Length: 103
View 1 (cartoon, one colour):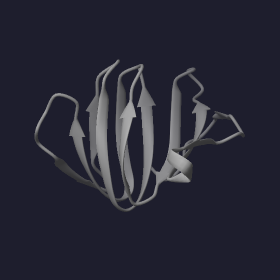
View 2 (cartoon, rainbow, N blue to C red):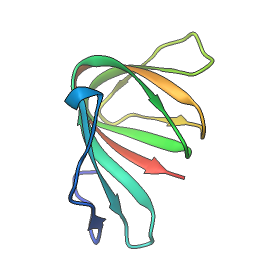
View 3 (cartoon, helix red, strand yellow):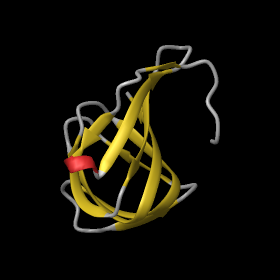
């Protein structure tokens, strides 16, 4: 997805992990909350409150969901799902652009 129409954007960015991840939250016309951002090469752990679908737009990363031993490889055009109230580890191998869908 290279363009999203009719959104309401929060203009203050979300900066995590000393700037290794920067995202912006926006809301679509139907009220759905989403975020779009970039993660720089690093090994990070994210916690979730709501279920998430992470669409990798560009880049390369490996992900391990909480409670699993297996790392999965993701590149642009692929996505993964994470349940609510859990976490995932991500190893970003090159700058990775993502779109996150919540709920």
